[in-house]
Length: 233
Image 1 (cartoon, rainbow, N blue to C red):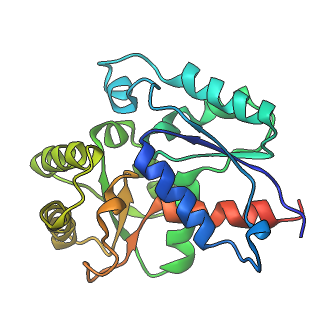
Image 2 (image 1 turned 180 degrees about the horizontal axis):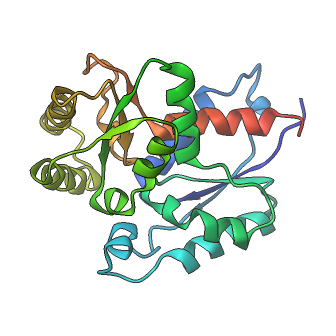
């Protein structure tokens, strides 16, 4: 079957980029290795800190992400994805920088909630301080008649500290328990499903740790990537 080449803006962080690529591999129907997708990856951890940029304490990442998109298009990508939730605040700038389609992780996640959990109305959101400040998910949830259930200030601080440890490779039982505790706190305030709105959260392995559905936008994006690559459009 003809395939379209995937361009991946990665490195935001690197472990999540590798996990995303593994998810693409796992969800690609194959009969041999040659059936796997052609993925071109720009894994650049030197992009300015996305959260700092949103919070106004660091430089904008718009130019760096646009340059990444152009590199991927020049290299032959037929469409582009980006493995970072908060970085989607620059989605419009990225679309303007390239002539190939861009698949939004955030939009695909909202579509998944509406299609897979049609009875859900209250959506819990675990995300970074920058992602939350941008209202990236909140606005799109509200536009689909979904109610975001957010972390408290103390919970957000705990999550940011946990993410800093995850980024240094701490994926052990203790950090997993902390994340599950934060999920439970949001559920206690009425969340009916949880969006893991930072690409590093799912790295600790939460598949069997929660009683309510957990939506990993990286996994959602991986499935959308496979669909797009194998489509005839």
